[in-house]
Picture 1 (cartoon, rainbow, N blue to C red):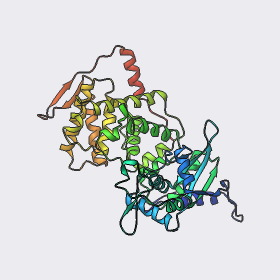
Picture 2: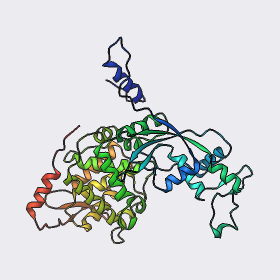
Picture 3: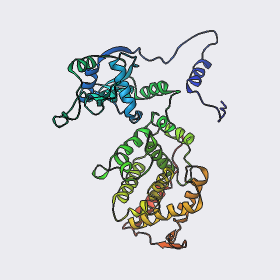
Picture 4: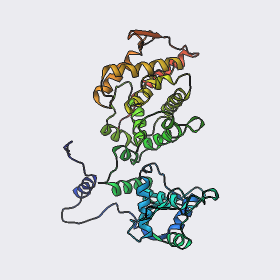
Length: 406
């Protein structure tokens, strides 16, 4: 079906059309129904306890980061105190490996996080008199932080919150509920990619957790590099990096539309490719945290553009048999080179082609050539010799492998 690229695509309307096209014209039928959810009422203090006990999961892979400002969090607390309407929280109830029920938060993360922070003393209740009062305070804060009276603390703790619970739904269904609830709201393109259910999304989410949000000594790439990691951007950049590497030897440009189709594939990533991406991101983290190599990320511009993050990863994958010194020189040269080529470093066709051209220029057969950032002339980087030339050849053949397409 043709879709006008300038028109907003309504996935709900398309789903409905698909269901009715195959049905008899004279029959009305609803197919693929979910089990009817249960409407439950929990006290605020019960929800807080479940979060602390690990029985509520606020961070499934498809969920957004905490994006509410302190002002908005205080506003929710005020609504609860003053009996204003608070929308229901939506849970998918599953059992963990030990048979315990875990409530996975599909919708309501921002609300539950605000409640959690307020009771733990991390957010104050700003009254209409513009004076802050605190639910919890430590001994050394008692002199500086007025405490909410016990009567009002008990009233808040016993306030009922409506929760809608789905039982035993598949992970893909969780994501679909999330998408449908968020549809038409301010969900970014990057966050929608995280909501896709596939082996590739699960794997890339794991890479993000280990290398971007975590890393050596607990310092991931989101912490050691200055780049945009808001609202799913780190997942999107990482997925684009993996997409480009997986497509080699083709020079794919990672648009959101292409990425969405690619992430939806049902085949699993090959173990050898997964290992290569692990090694690339480990090397990325080591270079970014080592004082001896940080000049690649700080000498040009401390702010790393998202498109630079993508192609630095691709460059490290292509040069994975070379030394760390070669990696640093190549990264620094690429960042200098692209600033000479374009005025605005954004993830578009022109910048993508320019970065692919640079990567091609450093992979010549007789050695690596990059631009000397001091005089603009090519300089040689000696390839690292391998203890096993045959293995090198096999790895390169593997890297040139054409993956299956969806």
